[in-house]
Image 1 (cartoon, one colour):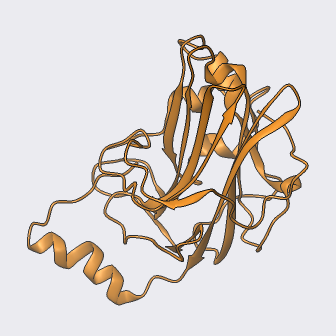
Image 2: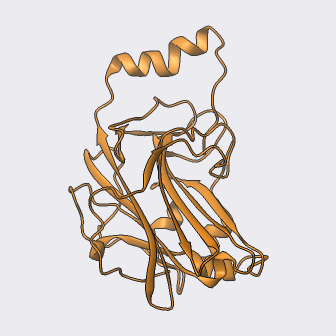
Length: 243
């Protein structure tokens, strides 16, 4: 089971990009076998992935996905970077933290003989506003570089991955130098609409790579709830564990 990452919650930032965060953007959409998103059993077979070589021999890979939280109904997607999640929130068995029925996941990795992630400017964007195709101005931003620099081993960090939920409280409040919360009042897990997410990587003022995805929240049919939370439990089917 995965819990909110206190390293991320305690260490986060605020750069506003020039590009609009709206439609999905990626190099490939499919499995990312090496990704755990910081937990156990979190699906990694339908992921928006972007990769780029930098400075000759440094390979940057950034990826995002959305998945169900704990044993909530599985998300679907259009195969092109847009995921479909159910509206609502709960506190599943195995945790005391209420959350939306779905999590957003990220993966940031560098393969390099000389560089680490701390050598790059890395920003993660997230959204509280259910309006479609929100621009960057109202999105929340997390300064992943500053999070890494404030972590236990910035000189050797080559991988950061995690699974988070928009209802987690730290995402709603600014953290100086680390996180700027969205301008939209608050995230409502029952609001139908679209939420935009992205990761931007740059170095010395130059863009290196970007990845973006959308999550569209739709009503959860009663039949899905019966199947997803009750029926399978009666026959003892093993559950994936989520944050």
